[in-house]
Length: 423
Image: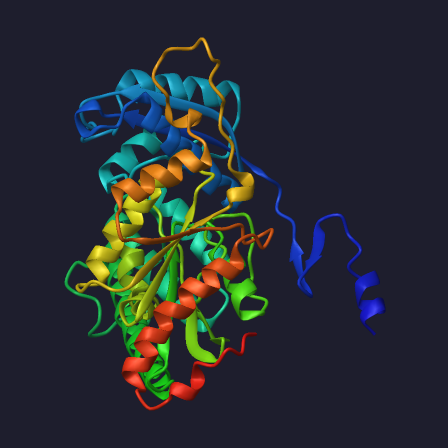
């Protein structure tokens, strides 16, 4: 039966993945736009880093970056975000080189969005960073919970941007007694969206109650949460420790739904939760919508902060995660910093006659270890490769000692758990 079904889908635009069939979309072409703001510490190098990440976001969404435009400014222009000269330059380029979309690496106000679209004569879609991330989240959502969270964030993003759009969400559902005096189409659409937002919040409130009950039913087991920047290898590590098959892919936001697995190391049981990855400039709507998902981090006893040490700006990524965690977690929790992807780490060896100071790209892995230990004394850290299963036993031993201490305080009479038995 499956073979016959496969034959019926042997088409160029259909692919099979994980027992599901997907229609391949033609890759869209995108132009990226960013501004350097020296007074905010965003120089040309930092701007390039941001745009590289934006290009990765675009690739994850299914678009190919064909051109990048940047401009030096003290602050964005209130009406058009970038200067009119730069707008004209971009418009002229996309008229000669047709593209599908222009993506800005910041949030655009409704006024900026409308004015930019008018300047481009609507010859390409105009998206901002939040819109792009929301699109990725919508494509990644699999469960009803994740879909509801994303839908809520999308409507909250759309509501203030209805002006100038001909959304025409649906016809007026009843007329008498519902339409206000002189109500226009835009006002009707706004009311429809507000009703949808209210309904989605009610649905999420019900789901949150179920999640709270689920967490209570897990008893007093020690909880460990995997956190980190997106695409640092959390799901790969989750699969390795739990011997499960959580979806993992080398793209941003591969995981949206929290996955919880029961694990035992040397007979000490605990719960391990894989959570959604963080990213700089994470849209406020998404943080609010995914509050229940992030509750797994808030209620965790131990935090495993996974870091991609092969990334040139891994310290900046750590700072983004730590800032987000500081908002979520009000009290200090035992934390293990897991520096992942040591197999992909590369550095440039300086020539012996080169007397210039070392740069970040010249530091070896041992150099970074020494620097980290001197900067963060007392912080537990381990260096692994989840893909190649390097130093996993060292991580397990560290995790075992941390969990064991909490477990023994919580269950003081269960000393029999701590035998020499190992998995």
